[in-house]
Length: 116
Image (cartoon, rainbow, N blue to C red):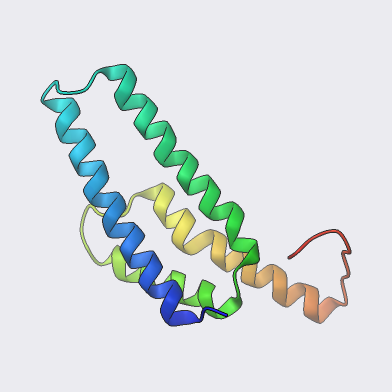
């Protein structure tokens, strides 16, 4: 099972890749190389990728999630790389998932239909 170092590496790789892709798309749009319609379609796809990442987090192990959050914290150190949506994706939602798991274990909560 992937551990914290794998989550850390993936978060940093995805964060840097997203920053580079976002910067390129913004520059292409500003230069008139892509239309407004294509620009907004690309932004929509990038947001859908964020949603897919969040949806997959419930299947990740706790160590992987901690590594992911550490990678997010590293990305926060660089100016203009991480925006509000990324802060939610890298920090807030993983914390909520871990708190939910802790609450389940300590409260005796049993839900038979899900992975959480």
